Amino acid sequence: MTSTVLVAGATGDLGRRIVRELLGLDAQVRVLTRQGSSAADDLFGGDGRVEVAAAAYSDHAALTAALAGADVVVSAVSGTRPVIVDAQRALLRAAVAAGVPRFVPSDYSADYRRISPGSNRNFELRRELAAEVDAAPVRATSVLNGMFAELLLDEAPMILFGRRRVLFWSSADQVLDFTTKDDVARATALTALDDDAPRVLEIAGSSISARDLAQTLSELTGTPFRLQWAGTTRTLSAMAAVGRRLSRGPEETFPAWQGMQYFVSMFSGEAQLRHVDNERFGPHDWTTVRDVLAAHLA
Image (cartoon, rainbow, N blue to C red; front, side, top):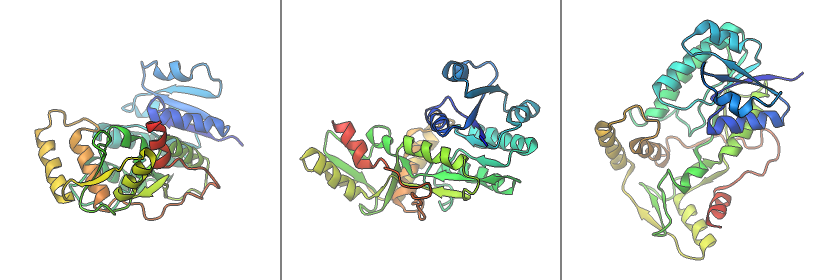
């Protein structure tokens, strides 16, 4: 029997990849779009395997109708409180009302469950939503993958390519988890079709340290990349707090200070994945950080 998977956030970068993977697995896909938006129709309108359903997150009746008949809801929305908590809360309540048995919230991050209070805004929003998901009468699965490996090339300024340096905070040997967006999309699609999926699925294309990263770059380029201590995680956390207070855009999803908080969570070890299960869906050639860097340098 073909499963019907409703995807929220399907027009975003990760959402489109998840839809592609679901279609490759012969799932029936329904994408949720906001009323008045043509983005979903523009992307998927010509594909008979994809149904487009329009509903506002603020309209419980319309949202419930859009979810009716789905076997699982996969959320790939991105944002701050109005999206991660408020919109997903509405999505969760509509799923319950529509009798959808399974729910995959938009986590796709490092492990936010053990982070210190006040240390990472985006992680704490996910943890707040997770408490509501756990209390709801649905079977949920969160996909945790560390950091998207592609961010090492630009948005996460850990590698200084021009200066041949790799930054680290506190310890150069702290293990950090990275997974490409395509691998996350694949695991999410398989999770959506897995009725026995666990509450949390941890995956990682690479689990490496800053020291490993510097060695990899040295081997790929033939030029030494050196480690550069950038301070302690406590110092970085204080810098992030100052940046947050001075920020003119408090609702930005990934301002510079939030990136600092992400590195605090990772380099402190609090957000490290502890139970990676890359074998759950069988053999797969995971794209490693080395692969991503090699392609970038080429």
